[in-house]
Length: 225
Length: 286
Image 1 (spheres, one colour):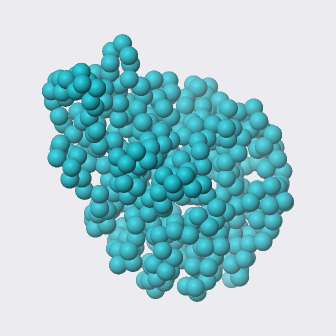
Image 2 (cartoon, one colour; image 1 turned 180 degrees about the vertical axis):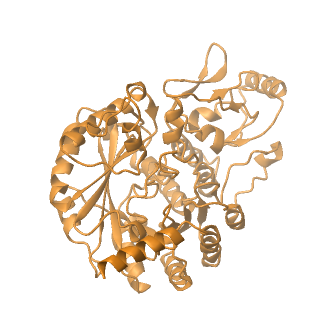
Image 3 (cartoon, chains in turn yellow, brown; image 1 turned 180 degrees about the horizontal axis):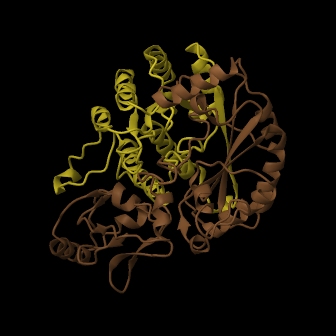
């Protein structure tokens, strides 16, 4: 799974996109890991994440199987973090998304202190992760660089659509939906915040960053590249 | 995946949410339809669209009435108003599409969801990529382009010919181990070659000295492929947390990495069996 690695953007554009996730390896540290993964997620809530999720049940902003017509006027857009914690019931990847560096730093410090024994990774700009770990007194163990996209790149959409869609590395956010959301906002039919939440619901593991999406959509409305 | 024509009201919402653009409203039947050969069975439509359970007849009547006055609904863009999507049973080899494309389904070969790989994310407990080694992830089809396995096979065969070992715990490697496949030559079972998936990852590990050769090999082979490739390169950091050698090679070859996944090294082997094995190894060394 490289679902947070190949996000499109410059290092600077990842300043509001920091993902801290925990994972276990089968046969190494997955025994009795569910309470630890739940604790990892629960510990994050006080640090104001913008999304979180697990690979088995989804994110804090999910699709609903039972909407009724009133939802067109009274749609619930707020993330439900506690549901993510409650739903986690088997070994999986638990991810937390932050849009503010100081919150990510505080969370990583707390995770280090808790000493859960889970494999903890940070996905953001190279320097961003380095500086967060340094501030937490942690020495990097391994690093996986994204070399970006190559070969038939003419098949890829515009940079802003690409920045929106690649925030779900599993590719569940369609280019056409991202384009449509930008158009909806340009036409004044939806706010950037609403548009970001629509996109977030298609990410099945909660790593989509609605705050960054909102910023990108806002920039697209004003035609800022 | 199928769309129940008795339920579909042709609102068109689903045509936007398909990552590979395989859904369209058929002008003859006036129902949303899935282009079966292009569909990668990612279930994004089924899992991502919220569902209402409105009466299709009433919705169609309202839509037809509105249409007379050139009016349109402004529905929530992420909703299927009549819950028209219905998963259909998938048999081999089509079932491979979902295994690789729907991240909520674990790969049977590795037990890992998503693309089925751990790369260096668990390197602190597995030690799968040591100092002076590079773990390459060559991902095909992402974002939103898709890939057929005949394209992947071109790469696996070229890598096998270059005597590059494939990562064992990887779903593409598992395909080579099936009847009709061959790990030594990088051959995939013939029946999967035309199957299309949203993306998949070939994962290899080589000494740092071969990193440049691999980069050039990938660039040479990809030229004949009609898809997009995302290259990832992972390695173990030095004891001081620095990593200078791989990044230098990448830059020398024209890459300018902006983003990375960084393993903090907080993982600890805790399974009883793995701990015992570790202690045995330490004892033997002493």
